[in-house]
Length: 449
Image (tube, rainbow, N blue to C red):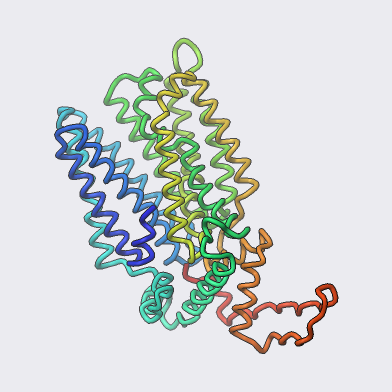
């Protein structure tokens, strides 16, 4: 919830540094913990670092990516998360022969390595977000960043002007609906928040974190007792998930977000049903449980995994993006906490087969909700997102902001109204706002996020 303060005030690169430093501090505390309280304090700091990183990572990638590549590039964030999961499963095999009282400390210590690279890259390699630079009056620096991304000779001033126009439109609209644009949103902003925060909740409502946390426990309940066998199965499941995410990154920008989300949710529902069937009977089916879990991780990774943060990072307009991403991340982690903390008790109370049938139904309910509320955002520049949602919802505050901006840019296209006071029903109709002619470079789908 507090990540937007650093995001908006100090920029995206500082947010990466702060996230990594918090994570490293929490990892060190866990590694040297000599009692339960210190271990939980360290775990809390690790959670803060993860939440901070989730709020800035997809946001930064979306803001620095051209629209036609945004889905693929934001997907690398999800790919990196799952690469970490696979490395975690692999560490289980590496330390399988080490004393359990020592192995977990080494595993936690290894978690501090990659954040050090994040700090280095955020300081010396990664450029600042051009949208953040423009929003803070640093257009010259934004041009320099854009020149590194676009081909030599490309007029990046056009992109800077588009970013300035989009920010101005959003500020006019925000002023039109009051300062509480998030607490008291207009129809367009309400739909934006509903989609962005809703899909972040839905990602955890299908149980992904809880399933990953308790995979070993589920395998044990299905009849697989060997620790080494469990570790190999975990590694195999992790590799399946990682491979499908790589494929999903290419599909997001080809087929769109909606189809992949629908296929993902339907597949998760079927997979949960298969797992449920494997637990019916006196002796659980080990093969059925493994196949069902593998299918679940694959279907989750084809849509709900990568598409969630792609959609959340692109639907939020500049005026609310950092705050809204903080809310979306908080909602995501809160839902994950609720599901993870209640997973075992609910499964025990309902039986494993009953629990997985319930999860299958939850996936179908979320699928119906997505079908109604989730629009397609593939290939749309972030600068046009507020206008897009205004057209979907008929939000006059956004549309009038667009009209006001066009009047400011080209007043010759609009005639001043006659200074005649008439009754409301007898007033002449307002002139229709002509469409703004596209720029010469409109064929270049390279508007920076």
